[in-house]
Image 1 (cartoon, rainbow, N blue to C red):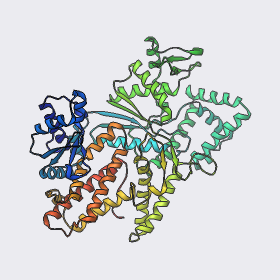
Image 2: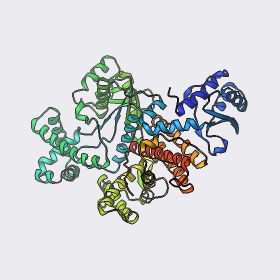
Image 3: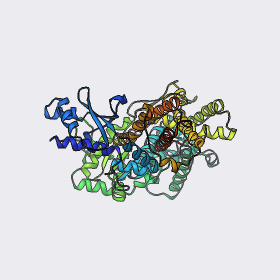
Image 4: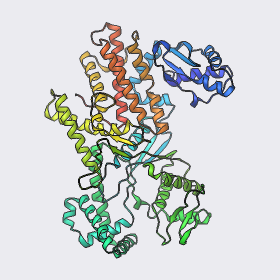
Length: 575
């Protein structure tokens, strides 16, 4: 274990726990930053955990552990409240930490969390829009949350494959192909593909309400597509290609990339073996009207249908094939599906079926999220359709440009536009990622683009101001990395203890699949750094204090930028 990280400090306390005859799972030993520095730098409630387990007084357990702590990095330890163990840390520990953090933050994080790069693999499915339809604002949540989780796991050392499992198969394509043949104009489609295809799809449903036989035509067209009819396949491929091209424009604006884009159609020829093996093993059995099902574990749940009575497969069948393909291709340790909470039952069924069919050894996780609403009530366009993602991004950049013109008057018009792009897109992302994903997520324009409070402009301004201080100091960053800390003021101590908690915030975010832990951490760090900036001189301080504050400033820049990068947010050079 690296001798200079918060994990080492936990290990010191763990050794003391074991030395006095107690046993505790290392995962149950947590360190928190103390609320006031006069009571220590970090606090652990391990004694209360042990007291409950062994039936002892928490303060007695804390006293035994405290007396057994033997390490030069601990200046002293105290018991607080009902049995907290508060520790004061030597300055050399902080200097070594700060230097290591500044020199290579990725390595520092991986060593702190005990990960070896590439040792584990994560597969994650995010975004998954439907072909031939515009991406709506509701696609933001899976796309942004999933992208942040993929980036987080990369940073902590996982090999990550981000897969966009697009909806490009099913009866709806038969209906769309029929609509194109009947009412479509290819020239119009080529000119404005997605809106025109959506218009045709909507028209099919309007016409089918008047003439129900159109549904039969739609099914017949899809049957031709399934059977490999060359003209149907050619038209379907064209629809998929132009849809992907349109999606890619939005992904580029969002700064989101995928390692793999395998839609439902990719698994068309990978389902039969699963069905046959499941039948042979007696796991897939006959259900109502000759459908094939897997019986549920919970008698209150409905059976899992894997083949319809007419022999057609379902989304569930393709999902099972996806999991098997992921296992055989990448042998992941973890499979993550970022899909809204409405699909909770579906994923319970999917994971149960996966286990029964023995398709993977990986741990499967459904990362769910709540619904999105706008604080001002605006959630649809004037036509009553779901608000398009493109419209939200446009509005974000327009609002950010107005703000840039008000606040950044010294910047040129081009610089203001670039700032507006970075700040607008960043604000949309941060608004989502700073909220607990399991709750409904509120879109609040005023909060998103405020220079006060937990917002992207506030964090960006903190980072750019810190960068400006280093620039004015006229010292090379490599030189600053070699400085030592002499922590004489509580503002300095608050910032360094914040910095020590970064790896803990990443650990919690990864363990719970909640990026808001990172956002909340960055906001707390920015607040404490700005308090230091407002209370203390940096550039005019005497030599040791100046070096201390410059090293802290550099560390804050590195951590804020690193955290925002995980969240998919850029930091402008100037604001």
